[in-house]
Amino acid sequence: MKVARAIADALYAWGAKEMFGNPGTTELPFLEDIPQRYLLTLQDGIAMGAADGLAQVDRRPSVVNLHAAPGLGNAMGYLDSAYRNRSPVIVTVGQQDQRHYDQKPLLYGPFPDWVQGRVKWATEISKVGDVEGALRRAWTIASTPPWGPVLLSLPMNLMEEPWDGAPVPAPDPGRAPPTPESAVKAVAGALDKAARPAIVAGYEVDAFEAFDELAALSRKLGAPVFVEPLTSRSPVPSGLASYAGDLLPASVMINQMLTPYDTVLLVGADLIVYPYFPAAILAGKNVLYVGSDPGVAEKLSPQAAVGDPRELLKRLAEGVRDRGREYRHPRDFSRANRIARARTTMGGEFVLDLVRKVFQGYTVVDEAISNTPILKATGFYHGKDSYFGYRSGQLGWGLAASLGIGLRREKTLVVIGDGALMYAPQALWTLKRYNIPVKVLVLNNHGYAILRSYSKAYHPPLVDAESMQIPALDVVGLAAALGVKGRSVGGAGELEGALEELRDASGPTLLNVEIDARVPDLFS
Image 1 (cartoon, rainbow, N blue to C red):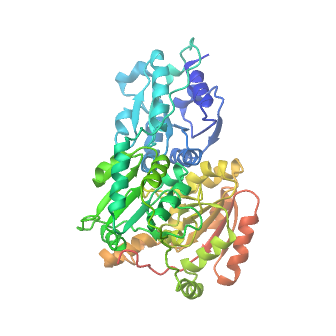
Image 2: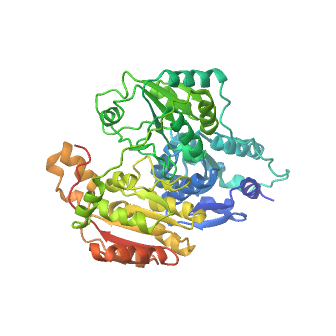
């Protein structure tokens, strides 16, 4: 047996049954004899995004194999997404033959140095004796909350070395650190003293399946539950009466929405902001944190209990007083009128309301960009694995991630803008090749609406610039060239039937919907 097979066998035995990649010469010694199902993508970035999606839905490490310097470079934006999404991905990178490192050969690079700040840990395995320790450490670090990617650089000559040892023993399972009782009591005491507490729920509620515990604490406190800005997962269960909406990623908007509350409890949540505003976030409020990420606690300077958020919510619910009143968010009586008005222009509220009705029970992968705020307000959160988004701004992530998510969730719908689609259209080919039954809904406004909206608020001369518009894309023709069937609709009367046809189609299928192309007011 060779070193390459020992590595692959260990990863397979620990649960990584699939591997994504686009191989080059430096990867061939590693891939020659692997037990994993290898899924070919047509560029490395898509492989990275697919592994991100699979790791999130599996809640354990996935494996991607990247092609040396060019492959890692191609995947850097997607690696950033995995890091920000807290996805436990084992990133393996084929490395040049060590025997001519002094020549700085083609494809070589100091890969662990390149990824600093975008992985939890990185190393190059330089000799056979280091294999066991590096593999076990990589798996444990990736799977210890807060999760995140790690990188292993694999020199091609090392992969050919003989492996005479026993199978690599299973690593220590990653666990959130134990939380001192004093920290939990301090947070519970602060909540008891609050006159008007509010909860901000984050991605960890879904990752740790803490929906019931969140709802129980909300009921006991009589507190509304807001969703963190730019959440990457569904933080609330279906039908949660206290769900009060999503916070927007700007300090002034966060402060405005949380103005009535004196104490804010972050549950596995972060407060990501963009663009810059001088207003401090939640100044003058008592900010508390429970969750697995000490970095978030340190950044926001709250009183924190760091650990498993599900367990912490249970302990808090047992420790706080019951206020005897349940918060119920007021019904939005104007919504039906907005939907009716949006019908005439194929506006987002009309289109996405129909999507919600037709695709009940689906996992939604969101890269709707300018329509994301509408999508989140339309009712696509319904508990475990119901919603996946991203925190990085890497266009094309949604279609790439759907490869991994669709392997586990047969009912998966990607909602993506036309501009974002063009960053990773090759993912359609992989969907088709492996018959991953993802449905792709393209919201086509013939341009970069999010950029035009930002320009409208801050740089008006650029609103109608040629560089902001992408007319005449043949989205359906592009899908057909990559093997995926599709159709286009542009009128309200045919939309519901087209959505039902998309839902009922076998295999990966695409629907291009011509939506309102007017510039939205998202930043003003």
